[in-house]
Image (tube, rainbow, N blue to C red; front, side, top):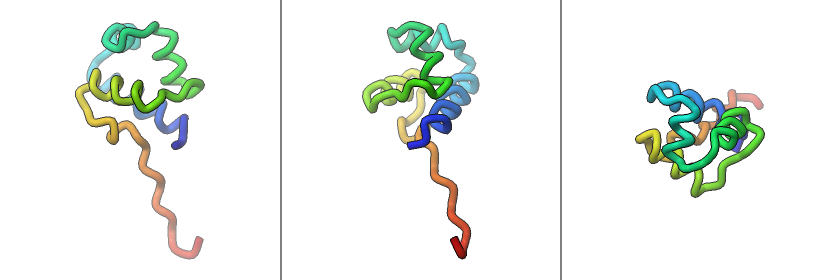
Length: 75
């Protein structure tokens, strides 16, 4: 899984829901530093944390996972 794409999607969904990093961190019961490292892509959340993030954002965990770009013919 592309760590940067995952980080981007988590940040985008957080902003879409109107949460600050501090608010999301509070919902997850972690420090803001952890949320920041996840959103910068320097830390990849494990499957349990990914589920917790999705639950906090009110979405399915699968929605956070980036979809690989379709390959074009001839590649």
